[in-house]
Length: 144
Image (cartoon, rainbow, N blue to C red; front, side):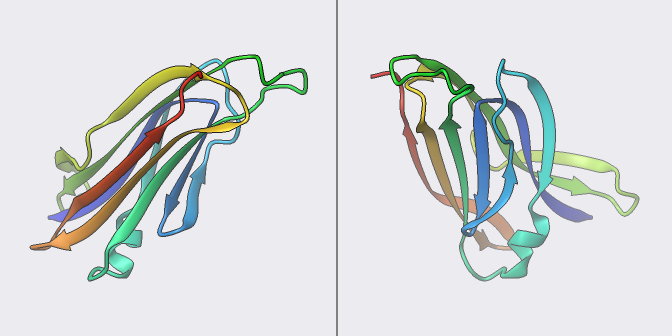
């Protein structure tokens, strides 16, 4: 049996950047009209590179402009939907089970453009040969 660690991004409306220990590991670019996507990002090797240290996983969602005609008075939608999970696979690569590592995030709002809509930071550590979240800091910016 082998443990794998994954991020599954399901929706991005605007821009989502995922950072691991300060390095960008995925950037959606600016996307609009809230498409349903199904992007999988494996973080197993990143976690195992330094197994005895804590790791920081950050999701930064931006409410960027769509066109040069946007003004600060216009409201723009944002929607970010993702989850982080551990997958147990057998020697043939078949999935045996999956376990959520964080509460799945699925928020949809509007806010002023040209700002960071969310910053969701998780700190992972390895305890008894399993990674667990020991801290979570979330900030969200809505219409004001």
